[in-house]
Every structure is written in structure tokens, then in C-alpha cells.
Image (cartoon, rainbow, N blue to C red):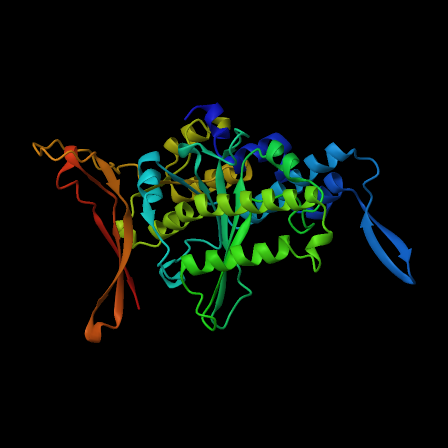
Length: 372
């Protein structure tokens, strides 16, 4: 990895481009800079505050809102330990070919409370026609939900200026601010929403109620109706296209350590000769001191996932059946085991290449994670 590739990961890049580390201990200061300072106003007999935005054009307001959301996500990631997971393209492709609808939230164990997954190897378009790429996703769980209720939150990262501008239109509820790519999945034992498929469907129904919330839809103009329908479709299509891939990444990270293919190390070509200093470090104390200096410079160790993983290769066959080679989708299986079959093993059955040129396929490796 050369110096230019240090900007490969979105959290690193926006930090360097905008000097975000300067604002780590002054969160409100940065927000005031991009959204406007808070000012007191007296209205209807009450003192209230609102942002002073008069110095910004409408275009600047849109761009500043994206900078604001980037900073909030980056700040949470930075203060939570700066953890990055970088999956290889081969492993991402196989995970993208794996079904997750029937998987329970209990099968997912997040490695950290807040972390970043790079999705760049797949070059996923945010929306057709924009050519803007989903670079990765910030993942977190909401710690305030208890008693059988939990939430996974996803904030997708990338330069989404054009897509955002196209979505800031009349009729879109203000809560979305033109952003169709951030969302969460809620799980609730009381309502039996405990699987990925049920949670996503419940979320889609919620979006429908929020976006088309008028009591008298016949009074809404055709322009607003079209804007809302277009925004709703973008949000649904994006979530259905991307969320299952991310969930599969989380399931892979939930596997036992001995079944994970993860190598944790610093990126190469760090500034200030840090890589050379690491190679010369002799004592634990020296290495820790160098590590602190690297961290203060805005870099951290990266978890490289799937570095030795090899995707199944197509096998030739003498079969005369005219069946085109194709992928049979992978899936996860909960297998009971132990005394009284009260425990479960989550098994990943990888996608298999089958067909005329792949008779018998290449059997996927079985990965297991025990649940108690």
C-alpha cells in the first residue's frame, strides 16, 4: 500500500481532507462551522435556539449537511477505537451470494460497538445513473434498547453529493433530509420480529407510512407524489440490495476466532517513517509508544478479512446435459447439538458453482459458530 492508498479507506480520507481530528474534543464547534452557530430567539413567549444559516447558499447548505453527517459518523468511529474491517473481493462476492432472510439477530455478535466495513472492492453504485460508489458502512448497535428489543444501525459512506442533491425535493419528509442510504433494523421478541427478513420488511412498511403520511392524499400534487414515490423506491431498492451483504459480513465476523481469516496489521507506507520504526522496535514499551504516535496521526491497525480465502473454481465435466453453469446461492443453517439439542451451531454453507461445466460443484467450506 503506497501513500496514496492510505486514502483508500473513507474514515482516513475525510479526516485528512478536512482535518477532523482537530475537532474531536470540540464537536459542537465543527457543527457550528458547517451548519451555522446556534443563536437564541424569543418566539411565542419562549426562548428557543436555531442555526444561523443566512451566510450559506442553498447549495452550500446541502453540501454542509453531508459534511455534518460525515463528521458525526467519523467522530463516533474515531472515539470508539478506529476499527476498520477490509474484506477481499472474493470473500465479499461469496457473501453477497448468501441468503440471510431466516437468520435470527441472536446469531450476530458485533466485534465492537462501532466500527467500519470497507465495501470498495465490489464497486457498488449508490444509485443507478449517479456513478457514486458505496465505499463502506459504519455499523453499530444501539445500547439503549433492552428487554428483548435491539437495533442494528447502518450509516453508509461515500461521496454522495449528486445523489443527495437529486433527493432534496418538495414532499420528502424532513426527517430523511434527502438521505435514502442510512437506516436501521429493529428486532423485538414481543412482536416476533427476530429475523433479518422480518425486520427489513417491518422497516420498509414503516418507511411507507412516514413517506406517504398525508391524511388526505388526494390533495397532494402529482409532483410531490412522484417525488415521494421515487425516494421511497430508491430507499427500498438500496436497502434490499445492500443490507444482506452487510449482514453476511457481520455473520462472518461472528464466527469463532479459529474459523475467521483475519489478519490485523498497520497499513504500509505510514507517514513519518512509522513502518520503519515499528520494525526497529525492540521492547513492548517502545512498540506501544510508536502505536500511540500512529494513532494520534489518525491511523490504526486494519483487520484484513479473507486474505487467504479462495473462491470456488468451476470444475469441468463430461456431462452432456445442456445446463449452463450457475451459482447456487449459499445460506446459513442453525443446527441443534449438545445435550437435549438445546444448543445451536450456525453453519455457513457457501455458494456452489453448478451446471454443465461444474457437475457436482465445488462444495463450500462449513463454518460454525456455537450459540447457547
